[in-house]
Amino acid sequence: MSCASKRRHAGLRRVRVRTVSDALPLPLPTPPTTPPQYPPPDLTPWLAGNCGLRGVHHFESGQPGPHVVVTALMHGNEPSGAYALNALLKKGPLPRHGRLSLIFLNPDAYARYNPAHPTRAPYVEEDMNRLWRPELIKSHHDSLEMRRLREVLPVIETADLLLDLHSMLWPGPPLFLHSGQDRNHNMACQLAATLSPTPLVIHDEGHQDGSRLIDYVRFSAQGGLARACLLETGQHWSQSAAQIALLAVQQCAAQTGITPATGQDAKTGLCKNQPVQTATVTDCIQAHTASFAFVRAYASAEIIPSAGTVIALDGPDEIRTPYDNCMLVMPNFRVRRGHTAVRLAQPAELTAQAQGS
Image 1: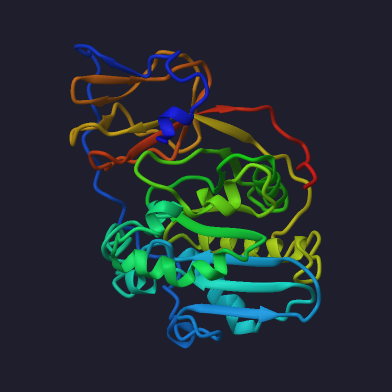
Image 2: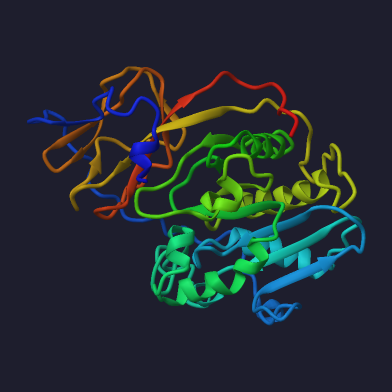
């Protein structure tokens, strides 16, 4: 099912309008090339893994408890998650309860990463985060990323709670994405409420061009128990993105009893019960032409006050906001045809405290 068919109120709003527009598109900007604020971590010591799977590290407490899985490097040019896992592995995690697995998902893509060209090397052959559909996994479809997915799938299949770490090319505040089900929403809100700056929590049913890890049936099935969310930590090479990735993993482990609770700590930046802003994606705007361009430089999470505002041009089409107070989630200013250009979301009231699980 396409993401468009999953949206609420499908067909009741006009987002894409074919017309002769008076608006002028923004010239396509050059992708950011700011020097990285932290060195890309050397993963050489961890690539062999410790459980017979490349890039997978597993730690057992010997006591009952959940299996917590943290994944990084779904895309090879997103090093903040690798920074967090590298820092944890250097300390040597010692779970008090349950099990902890740390996975470098696509080390082959990361081996090609060059901070001087941050848009390159997200993957080797295809986007691994569009492949998590059971029928595709069981098919004869083959690529380096699909082979790697099948390799780590047995670990994913036993996860009770999964945190997938990502980062962004264009600058923006950190945000959690989850794909429906109250249990995933609650997980994201609980984590967001303990971090500073507090990430947004976005309910997003996914992309038209494939299924993400957080969409995988184990985490998205009605009536299931396993939970998952994705954290976009910020711009790829910013120190703040690396730091929030590390703090999120620490809090995830603490909240599930894997490690002792941290509580509020001015030195680490961890805090409790911060207000959480949530929103629901209603429209996933895909570029239909190679000339897709925004009419100005929008910020991620920027709210457009009026319905019907033209935000982008896509060949002969205007892209308009479908309702008042429309949030733009992660606009992509160099989008390719057939890929997601921006998500449109309806913000909810500020939630003072995350709900219980």
